[in-house]
Amino acid sequence: MNTIFIIFLILSSHLIINYNPQLLVSCQSRSKIPFVSRQLGSWHLLQESIGISAMHMQLLRNTKVVIYDRTDFGPSNLSLGGGRCRFDPLDTALQNDCTAHSVLYDPVLNTFRPLMLQTDSWCSSGSVLPNGTLVQTGGFNDGDHVIRTFSPCMDEENCDWIETPNYLAQRRWYSTNQILPDGRIIVVGGRRQFNYEFFPRNLGDPSLMWLNFLRETSDSDENNLYPFLHLLPDGNLFIFANTRSISFDYNQNRIVKEFPPIPGGDPRNYPSSGSSVLLPLDENKECVEAEIMICGGAPRGAHRLALEGTFVEALSSCGRLIVSYNDQNPSNWVMEDMPLPRAMGDMVILPSGDVIIINGVGQGTAGWELGRDPVMAPLIYCPNAEPGHRFTLMESSSRPRLYHSTAILLPDGQVLVGGSNPHVFYNFTGVEYPTELSLEAFSPPYLSAENGLVRPKILAATGVFGYGQFFSVVFTVPLYNGADAVSFRLIAPSFTTHSFGMSQRMVVMKVGTVSQVARFAYNATVIGPWTAEIAPPGYYMLFVVHCEIPSFGAWVKLQ
Image (tube, rainbow, N blue to C red; front, side, top):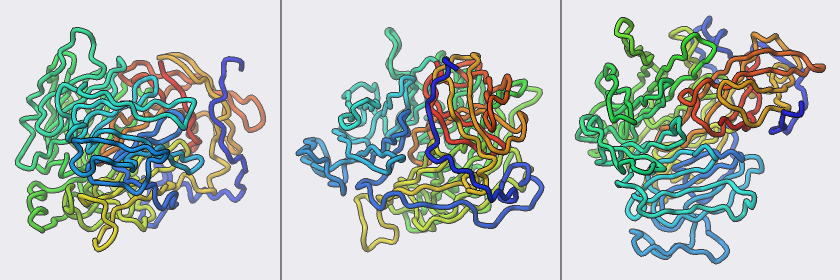
């Protein structure tokens, strides 16, 4: 046990005795019943106001959340404090600004403090380096070539943004990032940017690489901004823009394969603004298979119509694509429909392996004042259920979350939700959808108290491990159902903005042995992911899932 480091303890150890197995909404049970329409899950208001609207969010390895908005709309509702002010002669709204446009939120203590952004971070992108440092790229105006970093530190009160001007080779506004197997970050696209670059740049590397695919997928409404990026298990990059997708060798600047367009001909990227996830990668399968899922968006032409005051219904369709290079077994999209149309929804992978689809609108598109009919009820999608039985309607929120809203997974299994500002400025009165400064948490059904007897609890785990390396996890569960009922999963926390979680992924790892070491306590030997292409180096949340009910997450480092 001396090689095991205690890294996370669940705050509450009380056992819930009134166990009701009928409240376990599992994939297996859902595959045998019709579409579930009863309301499930619960909402909790965390903060009425954090002073800013949460346009961008990133969970860090110390369980703090970096949240930021833009700087070019005037003052926020939160003072920087300590006599600090931002002087920016290039700011288009307020050159001398003593208010914050970023905060550091602590979900454990439910507290927040202001952070200082110097340049405009509007509609930017980000990723976390293997050492846990958040790298944020680009923005607008004087911020569009800037790299900003935020590192968790021991002196929590003094951690703040560090800005490096003019690092980026091109303007990055509406671009997308992805962490790579070698620990670099690739930054792709942006408004009128048909190219990509890396952070950090290796000595001798070109500062910029052209990608004509991005030019080809830009239409009269663009519809290829914030392209969907997913790192594939073979090391290539899946890129989806508008209706088209490719497997791309970014080292050789070469398209390996183009996949069929998503059926229907309707765009899925900004401003149509669907969402996408890489479904969980399972190392227990003979071949680790990559499957992409894309849901929602707006019909072609919807953006122009919204600008003219006509708000058409959003898309209800989802597509799944197994990435295959075998011409005898070609990749084809498999389509299905959500119970509700939705644009600007966020797709978040839950530790159960399900996907929650949350936030968004039923009419219109992304853009100032261009969304209507907010979709208040999340959906939980079970990828392994039978077709027609995969969607479950959840409890509705009381707060509309439209343009510029966000959602991320927390280690306790809740989904943190914030933002929504469909206006050029902060506007709280005389509008149908006021600017939202609040934070909420949605608790999926697996957090129901009735699941207490089958909920695992991590006591200890090896804090740092390598690829293909055995490591130990000690956990307790009152009503253990055998080794076949337990799995061990890594989730990379995403950088989320504009309906896409960048670098989000789950890996289901192989298990060596599970042995009982005390009453209700078990020691599992788990095998780390095989390659950096399957799981890039860095910090992950480790979850034990038993009978489809996850533990709270523990931070581990893969290196």
